[in-house]
Length: 232
Image 1 (cartoon, rainbow, N blue to C red):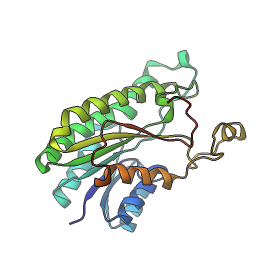
Image 2: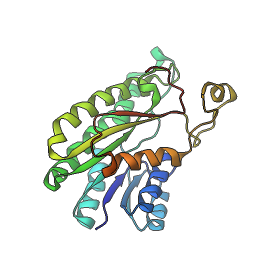
Image 3: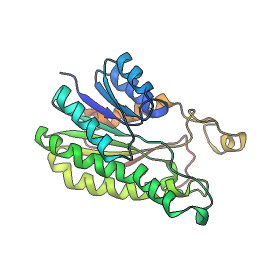
């Protein structure tokens, strides 16, 4: 029986690459994105899709309901999202901070509320949240992302401790720069590997963390950054 995976922000970039990677590995994928193109990708992969935003609790609920109605189970969740607001640290408005909270932290909390009961009943499940290398080496270019994804690291640890006994795992993947966005030469020179990651490289790490090969890995923040972070 195929495993069922939910993937958000799945119409392009890391989300779409992950959908393809998991489908190639035998998963049935249930996708969500704001763009209607997510339905085209779902048809290509023999999956299902809804149009919606990770910031809308009702859209997240529709995604989970679709998977439950179609397949009766949810084995894996990939919480991917777009980029939260950027700007000068003290120029960012309260509304921009709240938008970031919905986009990179509460989306994961809300999804966990929705899928955990089913995963507990199954006695297994795996969740991977797409974060950023800046969560633990904050950069002034990404103040909202760095701050709130550091909080995501704490949530993932609390969740993984609470639900490990139920066979449910949660980990974060922390990409560096990825080829879905252009980088300048100065940024390229910062990366020891001399290039951004491909979206497929990030997707392969996500696939591993969802798999039984990573069955003893939970509550971790896994950097996939080409060596750009310096802390050990």
